[in-house]
Image 1 (spheres, rainbow, N blue to C red):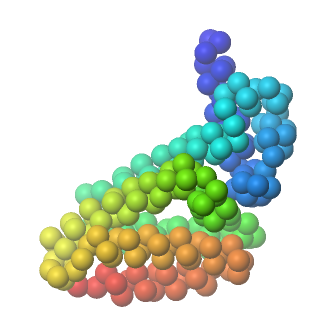
Image 2 (cartoon, rainbow, N blue to C red):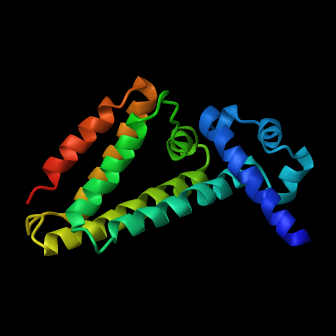
Length: 197
């Protein structure tokens, strides 16, 4: 029981701390604010994490491993054609943001990449690995679309996956800056054109 409490407390700090860091950025989120959000003493933070950088690395895993798994599941859905999987996934995300009364979306991975890529090569590498895993999943689905005749034979699926992944990250940044979903709507419109056979 003691070990499960320990794991639960670590997960609680990761979840609440990731929210704080997503909202305030790496530099704006102090350890004190993270532990206050989690409702634990400061010593608990250093029991589980060697430093704020170590916390951020573990938080990235905590936040993005489930997201990558959901992405892979959605893009591997055999009930839909590869093109339908991709368009359906992104259209559903855009719909989610469009339904929000207030757009307070802050991209954890985006914030960390802007703030920390040069200052912390370790964090930069972790962010890049997550984005690459997403692009790899998309590339596999694009290759399936190509094999099914939904994309031209000459399409470079690796390059297209990289472009779509980077364009989505850019659209999320514009969402935060402009506080409206126009960039996401533009993304979907262009994605539909990109995925025409």
